[in-house]
Length: 597
Image (cartoon, rainbow, N blue to C red; front, side, top):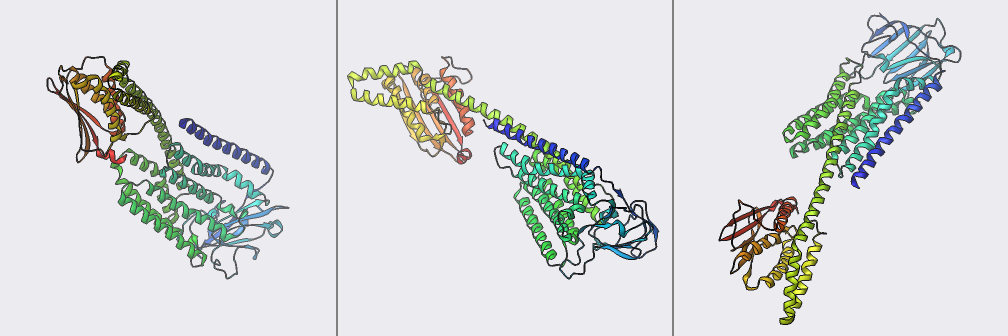
C-alpha cells in the first residue's frame, strides 16, 4: 500500500507538471497570436555619445554605446519615429534619464521629492506620444548610473526604447521571455511540490530535499525577477517598489543557497560554522533592509557587498563539505551536484563587478544543479523502492519463520505425549493434572500469540513461557530430566520463542539420549558489552563439525532462531559440544542493540 501511494503521488506531481507546461504553452501561443497584429520596431539614437564628459564618439548601430558609464549623453536622431497612434516606449532600470527633443524635456524620471528614496531611480516604463517626436527632430538622452560598484557594458540593462503601441510591451514580454518564464515556473514547481513530495514518498522528513526545494523556489523567483525586471512597472507602479522586490528576491535566494549547503554538512563543527554563516547572512539582509528603508543606502547599492559576502561564505561551506568527502559516496554526489550552482554563482558575482558576458551564468548553473538533483532524487526513490521490497520480503520471511518455529514447537507427537501424560495424572494426581492442563493451555496460547509479536519481548516473559514448556517435558521424562536455573540478568529483550529451540535440543538430543538422564541448565549473564543466555546440558554431546541426523524439526527451528536473533537484536548463537560430556549453547546480545530498543 505504501508503494502504491508513493506511485500515485509521483504520478500526481508529474501530472501537475504536464498540465502547467500545456497551459503555459497554450497561453503563450495564444498571447503571441493576440499581439501578432501589433506593429512595433526597436529604435535607437543615431549620432554621437560622450561618457563621463569625455570626447564624443560615433554611436554603435542599434546599441548606441557599449561601455561602463557614470554619466552618458547621446545626441542624434531616432532610427524609427512613432507615427499616428504609435508611441515611443521607454524602459529605464536603476538609472536616471532625461529625454529631450529639440532641447525640450519630453520625458524624465528625475524626482524633486525629498523622500528617503530620492536617490533611488528604480524601474520605470513610460510612453511618449508621436506628436512629441517627429521626423528631423534632434534627440538628446542624458543617463546617470548612481551605482558605481556595479558594472555592465550592456546599455539595454539600463535603458531601452521601441516604437509601437502601449500593448507592444506585452508582446515583447511574451515573445522574448516566454522560455525563461516557463523555466522559472518549472523550478518553482519542483521547489514547492516535487522535492517535498519526494521526502513524503521516502517515508521521512528529508531536510536535504526540503532545503533544495526551498532553494529551487527562491531561485525560480530570483531568476524570474532578473528576467522580467524591466517589465515589473506593468504591475508595480512605484519605481522603488519594483527594484525592492527584485533585490529582496536576490537576498533570499542567496540565503537559500547557504542553507542548502549547510543542511548537507554532517560534522558538528561544520554545522556550527554553517549556522553562524546563515545567521550572519540573515543579519546582513536585515541590515540592508534597514538602510534601504531609512534612505541611507538602497538595496541595489548594497548588492555588491551581498554578492561578496555570499561568495566568501559559499567558499567556506564548500571547503567544509570537501572535508567530509571521506564520509561516503553521498557527500561526493552532493558536492558534484552543487558544482554548477556554485560555479554559476561565483562567475555571476565576478560579472557584477567586471562585466565580461551577458550569458545568464547563475541561471545555467541552477538548471544543471536542478537536473543533477533530480537524478539523485530518482536514484534515491529507486533505492527506496528496492529497500521497501526487501523489507517486505524480509517481513514475509520472518513471519514464515515464526510460523515454522511455532509449528515446530507443537508437533503432533509433542501434543500426544503431553496430553497422554496429563491423562495418566488425572486418576493418580487430579490436582497436578489440572495444573498441567492449565499450563499446557497457557503454553499453546503463548505460541499462538508469538505470531502477533513483531518486536523482541522482555527476557522475563520468554523465561516464563520456557518454564511452561519444561514443565510439560518433565511430566514426560520424569526423574530423567532435571532443570536448573541460574538467572543473574534479566534487564534485556529477546525475540519470542528464541530460547526454547536451544532448550529443546538440550532435552531431546542431550539428556534425552542418555540412559540415566541428566541436567539442563538455563543461565544468564551480564558483561560489559553484551548479555548472554547460556543453555547447557550434561548429555551425550555431538561433533559440531558434522550435522546431526534426526527428523530435521529442531534444526529448521534453529535456523529460524539464528535469523530472527540476527535481524532483530544483532545477536549471535554459539554452539560448543564435546561427545560424552554435553553441549553449551550461548546467545550473545550486544548491549548497543539493547540500548536502541
